[in-house]
Length: 358
Image (tube, rainbow, N blue to C red; front, top):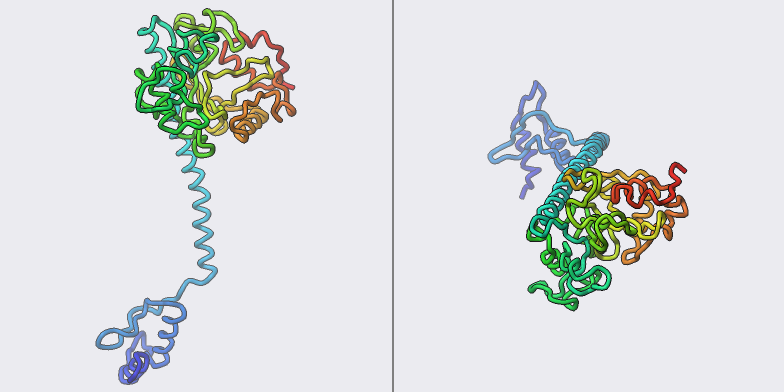
């Protein structure tokens, strides 16, 4: 029995196809067949039901150089588009983060009229966990709680809470829901920034935002000066609301953003809680008048300190004990000066000896 190729050759002998005055010979038939086998060119169809058909010019496959040129063009386009798309994604995340921070700030201010004009407490405890330090009133006013052991019911005493290092996501969210601020902002997603990757990297740290502890701690009398700045228990006690931080992004590596944002309780070199740096090398924060800004970290050593803290989760690392302090002392760090000023409006900043620009 003749093969399809033999049949094609026999038909080519019986039939001549004139294409631009060139005879379609057996040689042409064989050549097209070989191209179909080796170059996988299908623009010419040799075999068809009922006869032989030659349509159009015989196609040619891509050469190696042509393929490389196409690949190079695609790679060039990707190198242009990917950074642009990343910038768009980062900008969108910053918009959402800014909205989250502003909502928390407005919730804190909305809380005051219903609570004797007092601001919520920045501590993250509850009930009688540490009454000797901050008093029962302060602990009952915690804006968020420690993770709750049984997320299905409200906590009643200290044993109902669990360590942030071993808590599940449901237990963390329950701690947010049982805080005093939650009735004014009933959405746990608002407490988390999309760029906060601690959950993915370390399995903890869902809540991104902290309150300014120098204002919200409620430990001492209004206007008194503690290690973190001037205290304000009521909204009316807040001085310069348009220039003092209310809510700030924080990247505490200890499994949880403990209490409020404590910049330093041990002097100018005692910075003890790292800030976030996931918004193009900076973080977002709000003022008490509600407007939101982004702080771009200036000093390279500040980034060194933040990254060292993130590399050592569950370690409470003071700036003076980090490798950043070997490079530049805290007194010479412009970021420490700027952020101390924003947190306490020169309440404590003025009392420290700074050595900036060196």
